[in-house]
Image (cartoon, rainbow, N blue to C red; front, side):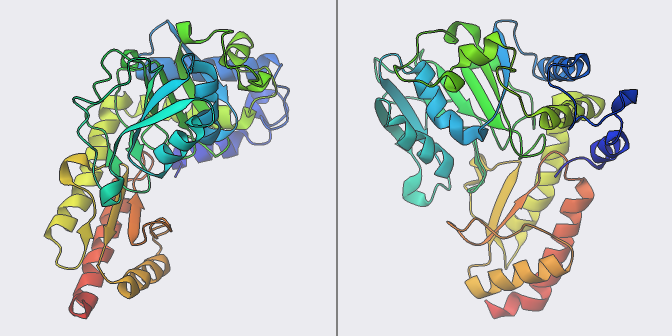
Length: 351
């Protein structure tokens, strides 16, 4: 979901961006106009996250999934990396890492369908590990790392795709942060990587394609090839929207308020129940079930007719999932809870 104010602004500029006579979709990425767009977007992102000067911001294509390969290609100097597997995307990254070296699964919550975050206070970190990898918020399963793992001095790499800019974060605690923007920031088709500059070197795995080298993109200021210009433009507008809302501290408060409404209802419902251990609950993704697959399907169908979209859970877990990203207004969550109450009154005896 994108903020309506952002969509309206983009609509107003669709045919003629700030008097330049063309749409952002049509202009050259080498033009002065677009150079200002990308530079302003980076400045605003740096402001929002207080990104230290020794970290580079890269606007890349291929989505988060391409980073599953790009990260080991660029960072796996010793051919060893440790992975904490807390969901499907971390598992895919772990499997991809195995193509490039020794990828170790040092913790996992697969035993309970990824419904919790494992204790990461004293992990068996490999002595020669180049990095420790996590997926910070698990979109499908609705879990979130509330505390970062103790990496015992090793580099931390984090996929933040589904919690990007939902709350403040200390960038200096990571070596590399990346996230597909389509969950919480902009249209699909781009990933933003925030990389500590000492990790951006020519020393990459043999055979790494030119397009997969962080240094190539950094040297070209994210314009080695034609970037996803319109997506960068839209992300820039969302950055400004978040700043106008009060920044990430205000955004976290807003997200906590929305999530509390839904979690409080689930905790007191006789029909619905959440699937995640309470202490590990995500602010962004809230999975829930009735315990009856037929009733779950009925709920999704009737919710859609009521105007509530995309509530069907991921095909791998079933049930329902409400994604309440930054742009989802409080009223949207209230409407969902009101519908859930109505559905429970009408169907509670069917379980």
